[in-house]
Image (cartoon, rainbow, N blue to C red; front, side, top):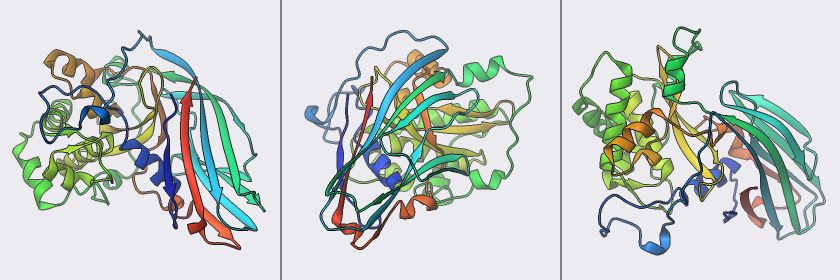
Length: 331
């Protein structure tokens, strides 16, 4: 199903497009009776029942960007993150572009495509049709690989320090982190953090991103907020962690999503999804902690991406004259 969000862009980045869409997704039934802190029925969508999936999943989907240009431009440059093949997680089989990119490049684990439109029309549509194979990648799978070489963590400080939206060094985050019992068993500690987030955050669509501190104060948020708080608490406990942005394939109702990865010494980077883990049944929650279906399309693990700060640049007119609508559709 297509999900649309129109954005007026003033020196805006495409990543913001993705993350704004993230706050309007992953809707599901809450585990308690409705309260004033929960979204009204018209804001939520119950996820359809998922079909059984094995260890891999073949998908095809279209990423589209619809531009409305309210000026007479001479040139428009646009950078978009695109999925890349990542061993053990996904294999990108084919990408077909409606407009060929001027260049495709990689930086810090993220792949980008840059497009240049000279004298573009007032209405422009860019499409990327992607075929991929998604592999089951979770804690249960990591345990089966125990004893195999683990990916080295080149700079652990990168994934422990605070940053915008992931304020692990704030006094409030530190206070909560200290209240979570420390154990030498990393997996048990991550599970305790996972339990804290799912117990203390209620799903509610936000008008803008909250970040970890505001999520903790308001005790509500969408998938981005669940992931930011989970990662911030992991970092506050000294465990490297990062937010992942991407998509989830059918039959999940809405495709834009955010989840997390944690670096465990025994297994390397392992994904966890606290949003989908927030279910009333304890047995199901424990199962979701260890088991993720092969429905995740990895896009980026950079929460604040400087490359996308100037994702749209123009010549001959203001970027304020551009409106972009981003859509994602799985076939």
